[in-house]
Amino acid sequence: MATSSRRSARIIVLTGIDGAGKTSAGELLTLRLSEKGYPATFTTNPSGRRSIGTWCERHHIHPPAVRLDAVETVIRCLNVAISHLRAGNRSRVVIMDRHLYCQLALRRVRGLRRGWFLPLLLRVLPAPEAIIYFDVGAEVAYNRIKSRASDTESLEHLTMFDRAYRELPDFQAFTIIDASRSTTDAVDDMMRALGL
Image 1 (cartoon, rainbow, N blue to C red):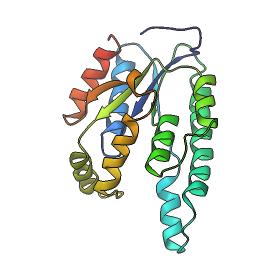
Image 2: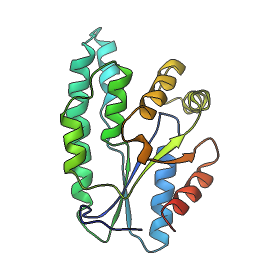
Image 3: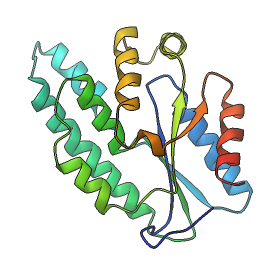
């Protein structure tokens, strides 16, 4: 695992659409790294999107996309900042499920501008050692979400979300792994990408 003057710790960011398997793979990667002598922590960095959406539906409130994004952005930024604080220990690897890239992709899906704040934060925060994109077909992800029955997403949203990620200016720097296979295979690919 490489180091850089901008890095205060080893940070690995997991990105991809819902149902891509980021959480399961992140948890297993944390275990595998710890077993290899790299103490690791896994963080989820949620934006509250599902909770806010459920609450709004229950109360028949339909906020404009820009306001919904503003609330989610604040929550996501706070969670990412907390994760970076946890990464302060140079001897620890912090694996982040979702990041500011996720919020930028959601903005594209909603037809909102990139803005200046999130790109500024990406320049200021310590650079991740790797940004891994879980490449999975929208239909596969949709079926995984249906089978776990803990949340819902439309096939259309997943397709648009995948496209939005790929249109991010930073996407060319992402490490892409095939997430249509098993969690073990995805983690094996990540370990190889990290030089382990």
